[in-house]
Length: 93
Image 1 (cartoon, rainbow, N blue to C red):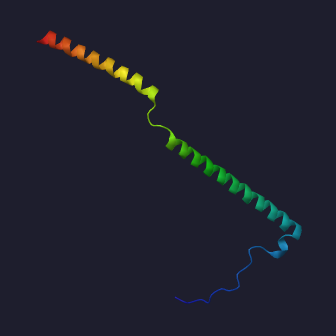
Image 2 (cartoon, rainbow, N blue to C red):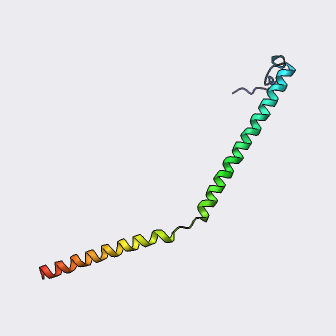
């Protein structure tokens, strides 16, 4: 395999004669505004995610109002099954 010399004469990113000075200034200001806007949106999104995570972490797992109907429902089903069991013991004994 042949070894080639290192290329030191890289072409410029754009040709200097492509833009006028006014066009270059306008492009720079628009690009800077877009960059500022992008960072602003990114910060807002991070704030939103952080606040949502904080809200989720602070929220209690069990609320006092929700536990009561479940207990009542469990007691009703337990009594129903006990009555059915007593009836089956009486009928098939």
